Length: 69
Image (cartoon, rainbow, N blue to C red):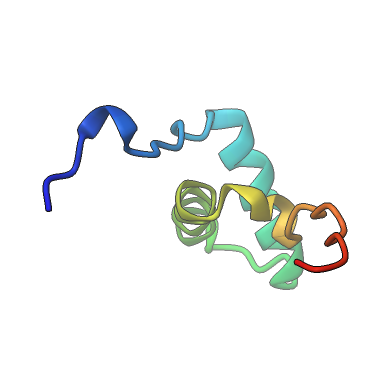
């Protein structure tokens, strides 16, 4: 099966501000430990890249399912 690249779903790269915010949230959730800045930054970037709906550690609210779905 050939995949047409024009139909591939591509998530945009998170902005530096988004990564910074997510890293701060991770830092707070981790007890504000010093010396984990790089780890929190990299983890935040990966979270936003692979799970863009989970910013701030919370999934985006989904629309309620309709009956029969």
